[in-house]
Length: 68
Image 1 (cartoon, rainbow, N blue to C red):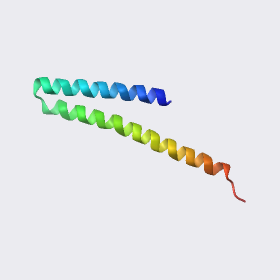
Image 2: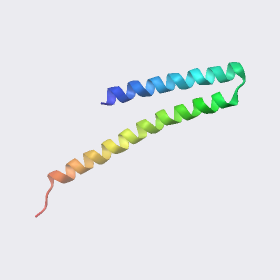
Image 3: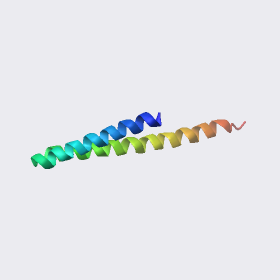
Image 4: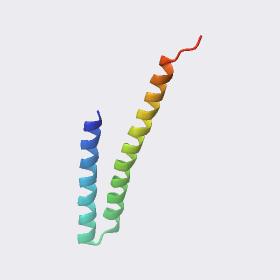
């Protein structure tokens, strides 16, 4: 699953760089903003993936230690 998310993130970053290059060429602020938002979404997706992975690991560990 991590490989698929990493590939999707690389595609998002490439798209972000493409948008920023177009923004620089055309002197268009909206494209620069769009590129920045796409890059931030790629970073946020990785952060959420690792946070959820940590939570799931913690819950799995806690489920093994059942107390009666």
